[in-house]
Image (cartoon, rainbow, N blue to C red):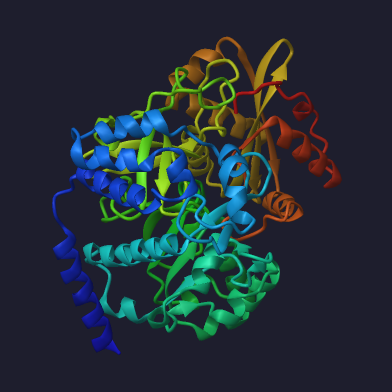
Amino acid sequence: MALLGSLLKRGISLTSVVRRKKLNALKLQKKTFVKLIGKARYTQFGQAYQFEEIENAAFFEDEKEFYQKFKELVPIYDYNKLYKEWWHRSVNGEKNVCWPGRVKYFALSSGTSDASTKYIPVTKTMTKAIQKTSIRQILSLSRYQHLPSQLYEKGMLMLGGSTRLNYRGNHFEGDLSGIQAKQIPYWFQKFYKPGKEIAQEQDWALKLDEITEQADQWDIGFVVGVPAWIQLLMEKIIAHYKVKTIHDIWPNLMVFCHGGVSFEPYRQGFEHLLAHPITYIETYLASEGFIAYQTHPDAVGMQLVLDNGIFFEFIPFNDENFNADGDVVEKPHTLMIDDVEEGKEYALLISTCAGAWRYLIGDTIRFVSKKRAEIVITGRTKHFLSLCGEHLSVDNMNKAVELASNELKINIREFTVAGISHDTLFAHHWFIGTDDKVDETVLKNLIDSRLNELNDDYAVERRHALKEIFVTVLPTATFYRWMEAKGKLGGQHKFPRVLKKNLIADWDGFLKTQGFDVATIRDPVSGLRS
C-alpha cells in the first residue's frame, strides 16, 4: 500500500509540473466565454439575447468587442429575476431553456439572504466541471511538500447533505454536496467516507451519530466540509470515545479542506481538538459552481477557476453600483478580469455551464493577487452593515471576532449582527455564540475597539450617528437550534452573519421561545442596508 501512495504522489507531482505555466487570465476567460456562448446559442435564452451575434464578435472582431456586445445585449440577473423569467421553465421540465437539454438536478440553496429556498440548476456539464476542478485541487497538493506519500492512501471524509435526493416528477433536488457525492467516480469510492449508506441519511443528527459509531474503523487523512459542522462532529467523536483529541481516533488526519465561511473565527476552538497541526486548504464551492480554491501553501487567497465552465465579471462594490439596500443599480459598471485592481472590493457576476447568465451570485470578493487571479471572499452584497455610512463588511466582522476571541482566550463558534435604531440614531446588536464564560461588556468593548482599527468609516460613525454597540452572549447551541427550526441544519447551510429586517423578527421570536428576552432588537431599522 505504501507503494500506491508513492506512485500517486509522484503522478500528482508530475501532472502539477505540466500545469505550472504562466497564467493568462484574459485569454483563459475569453476561451471559456466562447465555449459557453457557442454551446448555448440555440437555447431559448441564447436566441432571445442574440448569442450567435456575440459569438461572431468573439471570433471576427476586436479582442474585447465580444464583451461590449455581451454587456449591451444581456441584462444582469439576480436569482429572483432569472428564476421568474427562465429557470422556472427548467424546473417544470422544459428542455433547452438556458442550457442545452433537460436539467435533471437542482441544488436547493440555503437562502440565508432572504430566508427562501432557491432552486439552482446543476447540469451534467456542471457536474463534470466540479469533478474536474476537485481533481485539480487534489493535484495541487503536490506543492505541499511536507505531506507524506502515505496520505494519498487514506480515507477522505466528506461531510455534506444527503445523497437521497427528492424526486419531483421530472427532476431530483437536494443539497449540492449530496448531488455531487451521489455521482462520485467509481475509482474514488474506495477512499470516500462516510460511504453510500450513511451518506443517504437525511436526518442530520442521526447522520452524525452513525459517523461517530464507525469513526474508529476508518483511517481518515482528509476531512472536507463547513467548519461549524466538522468541529461539531469532531467534538462528538472525542466525547463518544472519551479521548483527548481527534488524532487519538484518526492519527493520520493531516488536511482539512474547508469553505462556505471564513475559517478564522473557528480556528482557535478547532485547534483545541487536534494533537498536532494540520494543513488547511480553502475552497469556494457554491451551489452555482466551483469558483476558486487555494492552489499552494503560501497563498493568501484562492485562485479563480478561469478555464472550466465559468465566465467572471466584476462590479465595483460602491455606492455608484449598489443602492442603500445592497441591490445592484440598473446599469452598473462591470469589468472583465484584466481590468480589476488589487485591494478593491467587487461583487461577482458569473455565467456558467449550468445556464446562469450575468448572474449576481451575491458574494463580494477582493483581489489579493491579480497576477495569480487570487481572491478572498469579503462578504455578501446584502450581508453588510451601513446604517449611517460605517460600511462594515463581513470580512471586518470576522477579523474583529477573531482578534477579540484570541485576546480573551475564548472559543466563539457563531455570531450574527443586527442593525437597530437607538434613540434618534443607530446601533449595532451583536449576538455571540460561545460556551465559555465572558463578560459581555469587556467583549463589547474589544469588538468595538478592533472595528475602529479595521475600518476608518466605522471609526468616524462611532463618533457621530452610530451611538451604541450591544452584545448578547448566547450558548452556541442556540444558533444551531434556530437553524434546525428553519430546516437548515448541516450540509452547506451557514448561519447568516447579518440579520436583515425580515430575519430580525424571526430571530427575536425564536429567542423568546428559548427563554431569552432581548428588548433592543425589537426596533430594527426600516430599509436597513444590511
